[in-house]
Image 1 (cartoon, rainbow, N blue to C red):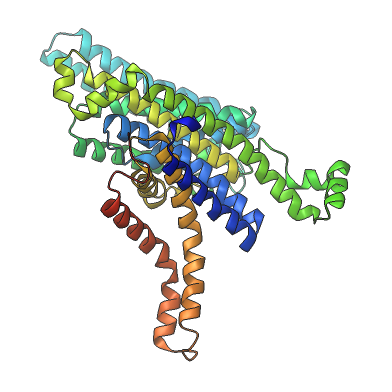
Image 2 (image 1 turned 180 degrees about the horizontal axis):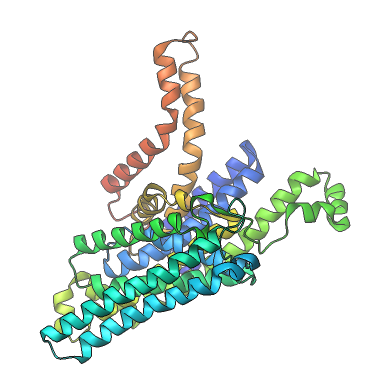
Length: 436
């Protein structure tokens, strides 16, 4: 894989690595590893979006919806089931969901099997109305029973209690399923309508996570998602770890935090390397050349016998699966699911900046953009505040201009994102590592 990068790309990765190393020396290695782990997750998100945009030119602005589905997978797989909630109304909730799904399936069968007459229309209306009434009656009463079970700490069904690492591929599967549904209905639209459709669906997903307490506790959040790595207190209580800390002459509390973050980094690096290996293989295969041909000229590709919509659906599902996997990894890293934190600024705009700055159509460029932009997103604000403190050090305390500038330090990161994007588009419009 390294051979696929030129000298410029290697130099850029070295420079970005120097930013992280410098942060470790100037701040702390604990802080640096925290930034590095989220940068790894961001790079995986950027890789998924690059598959959609760089491979096929699909404009997906619903990134946060697929990330949220990954976070939901971490809850459904890793959290233990809430026995009291299941006993109170869990089976009733499942029955309601089955009835709702059966209503939709029956309506589809009526539409496809019956001749196009008024009888078909009335039959569909009757099935949908009756099915909806029955569904709401069963489902709502079950939800009320579940959410009434210790609502301050539980009030939801929980998960399967399986190893949380399984949530990562499950997050990809959930996101891929949602992408398939979106793609079957929206990929035939123009790019701007596709963007509207993906944004709308992502907002629906976020709204469901915020309001369906029986599923995710809503805005009360799910905390304590199990980790795939040891807890700090477990390390501090183990004899071998305290002996190692003593031999190294370091504080065991700080060392345990660094160790946990290193374990996360190792897992994330393995996932990133596997994904980029498959991405490079796909990019340089006949399938990848076909996708680029479709991206560059759909009419010519269709004239050559290529099923454009089917290929778009393939890459849309693949890219969304990668984003969903990253969402599950992020929820595992945070050990919590906070639906209100899935904001477009963080999970859509920022990932798109990573892809554009790094170089759309280049897998290594997307990874580079993920590391660089996330480091800037985290570090620019404190750096900007320190710079403003230095610049205004000659002003008197209480000076209106000094106070205004210091209060505006929080906007430094937004200013920097815009400035970086403008500079890259002006001097390297194809990104820092452009597509070959």
